[in-house]
Structure formats: structure tokens, C-alpha cells
Amino acid sequence: MQKSKRNTLAGSKTGKSESAKYFQSNPEAKAKKNAYNKEYHSTPERKKYRAGLNKANKDSGTYGNKDGKDMSHTKSGKLVREAASKNRARQGKDGKPTKK
Image 1 (cartoon, rainbow, N blue to C red):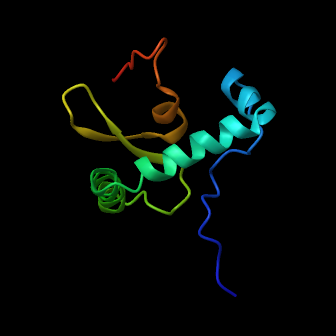
Image 2: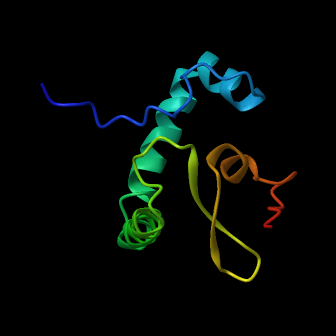
Image 3: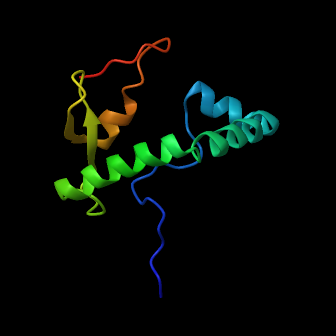
């Protein structure tokens, strides 16, 4: 039997943030957002970016071992290992990102 390729560290579909609640109650908006994301993330630039991060993860030995770590960009552009939850949560307030 083939193992699932789904990210076992990923969260559930039902989030508690304001945006998660909004998209749960507005299926048209959710469909529009998903359509945009599908188009955006299939561009050659995004694929190359993703491939680079995956390569860095594999080279650091953290890819697929379920240790909860991934590669994080610092202010200087360097890649360092960091907890995925902290790295992905650093969105910043009011659209202002806060890199380490």
C-alpha cells in the first residue's frame, strides 16, 4: 500500500483565525481565493522557489523526517533551520513581515 503524500504536520481545514472563519462561511470567496492560489503557485517562479527550499530542506536532513523543522529566510537572505510553526506564523501585522 502506498503512503499518502499529504503533509502530516499540516493543520486542519477548520481554523480559528478571522480569515479562516470568513472563508468557511463564504464558499464563493474561498473558491475565488483557491483559483487565484492555484494559478499563482503554478508559475515557473513559484515552482523554482519551492524547489530551492525543498532542496535546502533535503540537504539539511530535515525533509520528510517529521521533526517539525524547515528552512527559514533571515534578513540577510541566508537560510537557517527553524521550527515550521514559528517560520510560517511570522506573517507580520498589517502586511508588514518580520524576518529574523
